[in-house]
Length: 519
View: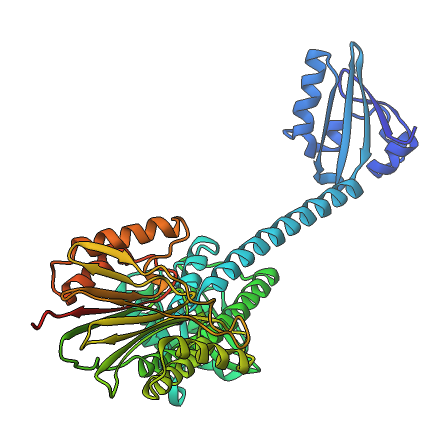
């Protein structure tokens, strides 16, 4: 048979040994016959083999097991078959199988680890994809370091103006540790500065390993309670823009896979930081442009009280294209305009500026509301920008209290006469820029003394989870309830109750006018 076979009597003496057993045991079979196994292999005494051998002899039940056998320096599969007059033992070397199983277990462990790291990388990448600002990025990194990596400290050190280092974002430790890390990272001769200079990550598996190169920060590192530290450069176009500092209280070796994972993570963070910085710069330009477009002061016109409000969208939404304007005309009438350019960001703000200045020019030339909406639509179509807008243009003749308006796909103005609200629901043409050479219409009505007029953009009333009809009814009810209030107080109430303090998906404008009874 292919197995080694040995037969023992009740005293444990060799009775039979086949050639395979002799080879595995390292003896000629004839040398073993008649000798007690305990004398030939004294290492057996007290071993698992002896215990199982005696068990099989006592119970007369076969036993099968596998294990490492020191005297023969290998793994063996052993089967014991007891009989009244002795024991027959079959055994074979299974080192190859053990190695294969160990390799398979290592492969499974490696694949499992790779999948776990891939999941962690996916999670942090998804979080970074939602981060718009640098603080958003640092928060995402801190959460990932704590939840996925088990880090006790996570911080981002960025290269600022004139090469100065600045630690941004929270750590997962106390304010004291935060201050300690700032002191460490701010020193010239530290791992942070060296990693920025070399653009190579540094992994210190123990505090002693770190202090071997930077002994002067030993007290600070001990105060931070760190044993294992990783410094990961964030590189954009070959240029380090900062370092991610990760710290653990315990000491542990950084294996090859972990180093590769952390380096990849730093690359994703670098791009997120750069994108956030670009977003901040663009947002600053867009906000400055929008603030420059919105009128700083409303005109003073006898017989009319004016006020306006502008609210940006939620923090996760770009600056939009909502705008308003009020212009006192040479004929003592008042032109009021509220518009909304589709989209967000710099492009929307640029189109908004073009429309606002064009509308002012047309109004100063004495054109009617219908003519102004038509000219704005034609200008937008001719620009080829594929950007659309809505607008409502109102001309209020204060002398005869006549109101003329043209609505281009915009939410309807609201007129309140006493406590009775009414929407001017006539639509005089589609959104601006939708149709070439379209002639818009307009309507005219007389306003009673003391009437109130509200112009607004859709950010005031539109919500995804509510129909626009219900929202307009709500606006009408709140406006009617606030009609006895002063214009400023009424506008504040509309923003509080209709717009709400948070959750807006768009910016909004509100332009309100009270026609005063000066008789």
